Every structure is written in C-alpha cells, then in structure tokens.
Amino acid sequence: MSYEPIEVEEASQETSSGMVEGRWMVVMEEGMGNIKYYPFDYKDAADRFFASQSFSRILFDLDGEAVSTGGLNPFALSSIRCAVNSQSDGFIEGKWMVAVEKGLGNVCFFPFRTEDKARSFFDSLVFSRVLIDSNKIEVASGGVNPISLYNIRRKISNSNTLSSSVWW
Image (cartoon, rainbow, N blue to C red; front, top):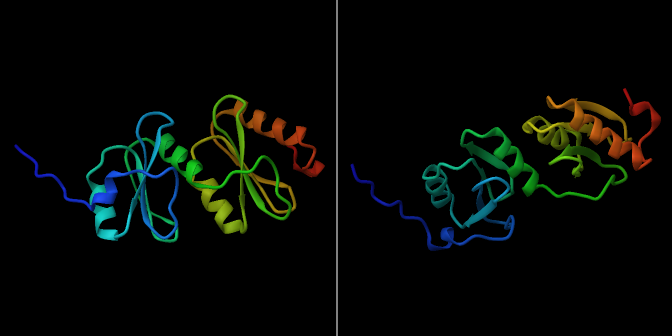
C-alpha cells in the first residue's frame, strides 16, 4: 500500500519559537519536552497537517483557542498546554492562578484574567496542580501525586503571598 503525500502550504514545514498571533497553529510534543510550533495561514492546511500527524498535538485557532486534540499521551497534551500559556515567577495581584509541578520541585505559575479560563486550564491538565482564586485562596487541587501537591503548596507557602485560610 502506498500513501500520497499530503500537500500543505510551504510555511507549514517551518516551525516558530512559540505561538504566532493571528495564525492557525499545530503544536506537538515530538519526544519528551520537545514542543514544536507549526504556524498556518489557512484552517484547511492546519487541519490536513494536524490529521497527518501521530504525535500528541493540539490545533489552535486564529485567537489561540484550542479547537482539537490528537494523540494518546495525556501528559504530552498537558505539556503542550503549559508551553502555550504565559507563565509568571509567582503570584500576580488580582489574577486567578494555576500552580503546576513540572518535574521534581519545578513549580510553575500560570496567571488568568478570569475564573473560567483558569478552571478550563486546570481541568485540562493531568499534572498535579493547585487552583488559586484572585484573592489568593486555594479553591481546588488535582493530580494523583501527593508529593507533588505538597511541593506546590510548600512553594506557595514559602512565597508568603497566600492568605492563611488556604492550607488544608
């Protein structure tokens, strides 16, 4: 059996260093931690490229919203979601935050303007994580690794920025 190559726009073969505003994006994890960004001008080309791949991947629309996922590795999809979202060094006043442990002791903070965006991101991850509201109060946690949750809470506690009502 032979396969005909899928024709995609020439730009699809190039990668970018991150998300490109105003372009369709296919973002894949091509091996552990190796995130690749493929920009497209047209939805049809992005769809064809997305469908032709076997790596875990997410298709993003022109506004940077995820519209489709593919692949069998939920950890890779979580890595992609973390890679495409803005991170901060710690808490940002007035923002909803999701704190995630990505590797032993490597706690990352993701700020969001709204509760809906923060909860959507929180719910899309399989990593251990903590959801913190705009008043710096823990409202949810997830993941199956209690040591990771402990590390996340310890990092938050060491920052001395959460109210004391957060803990257990």
